[in-house]
Length: 125
Image (cartoon, rainbow, N blue to C red; front, side, top):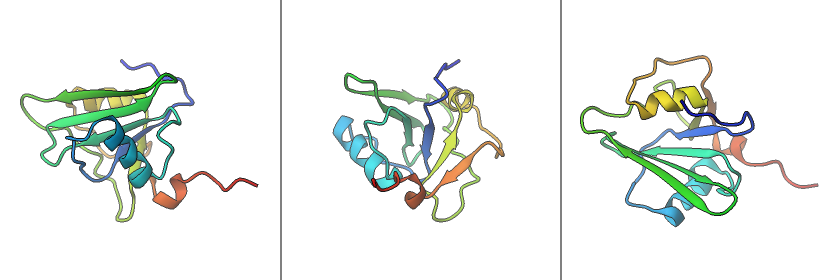
């Protein structure tokens, strides 16, 4: 089971990504798709088009880290409760652990869709 502090959010990309990208490529996807700062400390989850690979990118105060997993059989199931225009879905650590185990999640009221404008930080005053 993953144990994350309550301040850490887990964002799952609504669309598949090119997982040939590494640290810099995934951090640029965080800025483009999520509208978030890749150095914020949150976890950003991407899966490939086939759904058999997943990457979790995050900043851990000393540098970027990537967790990668490939299933031998089956596919990772992305949240299906995504409405058009949503760039990502926010899930909790327990749901991320289930996704990493290859368990398909049913749509939950806990998922919160995030649109690009909503993910951007408020302007500084």
